[in-house]
Length: 455
Image (tube, rainbow, N blue to C red; front, top):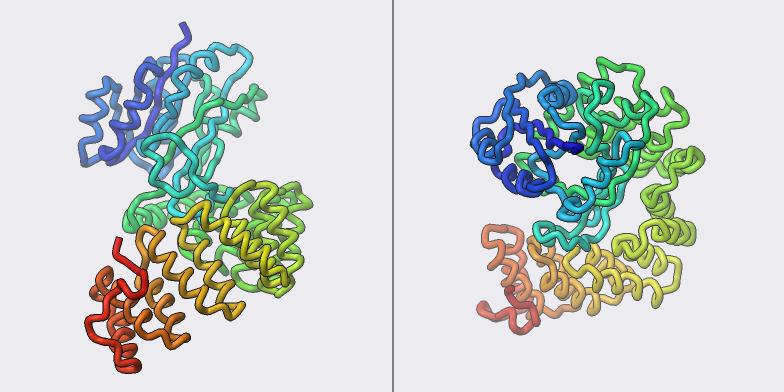
């Protein structure tokens, strides 16, 4: 019988490892866990699941560690997961048929990376509203899908390459083996980590990216990867732009590098230059929703609202039903002069994902631009009611809109609720005092007057 092993590298993964190993129960015949220096209960948990645990010295090289784990595998096939991932239950009925296919050497597997906002992206992939029925994923508002080779034959010629962002795929292509696509997915929860953990990982990946670039100075891919770290994790736009420009020079046909060059130029408000790079990304076949969305953003900032509408519409055709894109299109449509349709699109987006604060913000922005301040105030209060964790600035915005209408009682009521949620916020306290001085609102006016209630 054809056998399959789970191969992992883990360090201090105790918080999630058991759930990961539970997800492969009855699917794999062997588990190999390469520990790279855990100080928590990782090894004990792995042993409880009858894993073979090996110690691997960490050398700042993910591929080297993964290849050490592969050496310990005895099975015919290898499945790769990280501790913060879980195999979808549908894999139980599908893996066996895949590994019995003698013509295929490896399978791309869709990885669903759960994120905290519809505005998040991973590389050049946009977030989608979370429609997952996987129980552990239901609290996330969105996910970003990627594909990685995660299931492959255990052969000497197939091994990981790359100090960071390591992969098997290049070896599959170089050895002219057939690559298939698995019908199940892997659920990844690591991007929902706390801010301190994310910051630590960001510095770690930057250091490894720089090492990789020193090793492969002529690699367009290595320049792209380091540029993305600078762009996404540190906000260093000029450094990121330099990396993307070098990637484009090294490989002028590298469509994704042209895209990120254009995206970075858009953030720098070099909008005409950005549009040239985004057009080049298109010319090189990089026809993703994010390319058209970024073109739409550039045209919007240039006040070319009709062109922005056209690009956002094209983005929606590639990411159907995405409320973030619907709201951007709606805002551009409003600015282009079709107020009814534009507001309808934004409201539709809000209703489809009422917990997404950025969608409410576009509705409020549109109403303020239209000088429909009373409606904007009501929309700002609706945001306070519908998002899970309204910030102090959200209460300040709603109160300021009522203050513009001299509706001091309602402004005070909103600020009072805000202070109950954010009692140490100085700006909220000062604003409430100012409203009271201006209007003689009674000190103990309550939020009931405004329709804003604590949740």
